[in-house]
Image 1 (cartoon, rainbow, N blue to C red):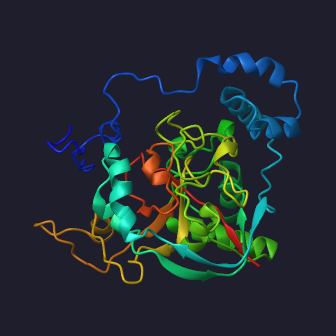
Image 2: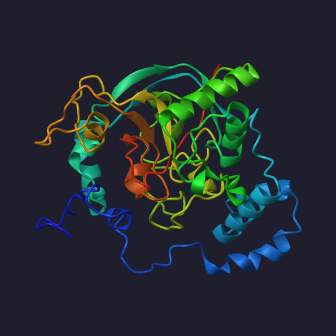
Image 3: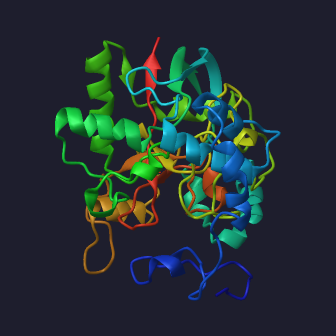
Length: 344
């Protein structure tokens, strides 16, 4: 539904179903992976796990083959998944500018008006400002189901991902990102791994995450300024489910991190607060954190929520923008995971 101006009508996600909120039709829509996938299985079964991992990340290999290679790699044992020694990328220290310049707000809003993007959502990104970032390391991939299972087994923690049906580990999705869980679970995972390994693991700050995604320049997405639906697992191209880590090499960030856009959104260490000189935006995420009174006014204006970044397989490309600030809402299509940083 649209209003007379042509802008999509904002959706009250509390009053409608998940498919409607995602703007999916009520009838079957074939958004699964291509039906040609099975054609690649026979010869790929002959490959070693190392070869499958290489094929999954080869930008010259067609997507269907990358997807199947990643899927089989997860079943036979993905060598990229090392719970105690995750692959990391080095991020140099720098003086960088993060956030959105006010003069660019109208252009970004116009580009993504078809998604239902509202100006107040974008104003969270303003104003752009300078920050000093020390050198650090960042996990190349988001934390996977297999890694998170090791945490649960070792700690007996009860933060079971809602994406695990009935709380049961999905054996066939071991090399897919874990989702959805509370921010406290991501914090606890970082603390657990730091204690287990003696290394300074933690969640990245919001500024670190954005810098890792942009490389320190003004690009809109980790791969550049223009959105490409084949560069990230977002709503546009499907398959409306998580995918094996690293199978979108076209979307790799300047520092070599994979899946910073799409697949699952990612918690950072910071709660939502306005940027220096910015305004508090009390959108649907802030009332959710603090509650509403009978007249829909925010009960506690100081209430906040943990910031998530990067977009997901359920959301359109506007949320995959490097500067977009988002948060978890208690709905099934909010797919949120995390990755860790390590202090140098």
